[in-house]
Amino acid sequence: MATIRPFKGFRPKPEYAARVAARPYDVLTSEEARAEAAGNPVSFLHVGKPEIDLPPDVNLYDERVYRKGKENLDRLIAGGVLKEDPKPCLYLYAQTMDDNTQYGVVGCASVKEYLDNTIRKHELTRKDKEDDRTKHVRTTNAHTGPIFLTYRARPSIDAIVAGIAQRKPEFDFVAPDGVRHRLWVISDPALVGSLVDEFARVDTLYVADGHHRSAAAARVGDELRRENPHHGGNEEYNFFLAVLFPHNQLRIMDYNRTVRDLNGLSPEQFLAKVADTFGVTEGPHPAWPTQKGEYAMYLKGMWYILRSPADLLADPDPVARLDVSILQNELLAPILGIDDPRTSKRIDFVGGIRGIPELERRVNSGEMAVAFALYPTSIEELLAIADAGKIMPPKSTWFEPKLRDGVVVHFLS
Image (cartoon, rainbow, N blue to C red; front, side, top):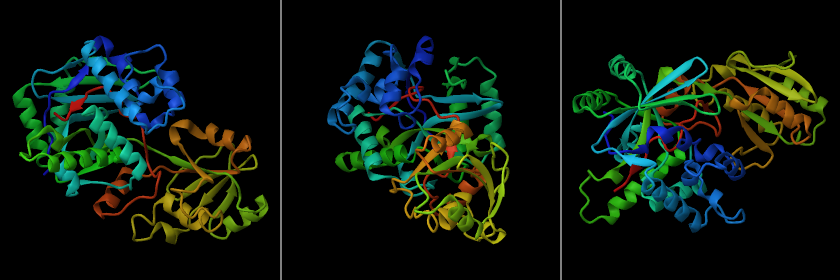
């Protein structure tokens, strides 16, 4: 069973919502966040990326950064920008991007279920990033950004959500990136109880996005449990802020690769080696993969289409047959010498939201030698890998739209 627990959320008053809600901390550099929050003292970037309010030479992991985040969160509450709901609620959060709307139920998920793998993962975390979010949670005493969870869609939950969505939302705004955000407060005890009961029939939840946040939330919850001699299991730190979306509403975009050099090869030598494994044809300008097993490669001002051999796509291992795995195992490692994409400084990753022009720009500028556009990983592939207890290669999925920070805040006590 999956736990979803109502809580007394702190959320922006409707008149502040559009100015408070901010892109998540991990999709912006400090410089980008400073620019985005300029002139907007209520932007939640002051909480999620509080280094923007300190001198640029302050280390991102300096204790002053976390203290500034807490100070800024306290300021938003004291100033009446964020208000606390008087009783535990669930919330419905809808995001519309282009012609797709995804509806997620906002509540608290269980640290225990995360630790016992009822909430399944598909990525490894980096210690430095996990440590960062752990310090942020402990210092602010809050989950300031939600974890993006998914579950296999259930018509019974869809029906309840559809009814809620017919009502007038608490807020409704379109962000500068064109994504529409709406929030409904679910305070009726009967309706809350219905959703809690329906989610109890869900066997498994999955971390779609936010592996570092979820790992940090679980780590803090476990630390506070061990530190509390009167621990009872119902304390707020045993639960973390999450938005739960049905799998069939989610949109995964491609997560593309660029490499700085050709590992000592000439373009002609490189192409010949690629053709030993992949089918290679000249592509249109620009090119784009149109199906699983296809890649678009940009080299010396030319686009090529690469096609994986059928036997690699039929591998029984759900990780090995991923397009990102085939590219890594058959090209990036053996030909370009990228043995560990987590640590190599020669490779970089470009989210599909930036588009093909970004790949061309980085190669044409001379910064990179070659770029690869991938066909998006499917949600079914993600679920199969998580169910198998396996881990995806790094940078396999790019979810859009991103959840905004500051829509609802959960305090640990």
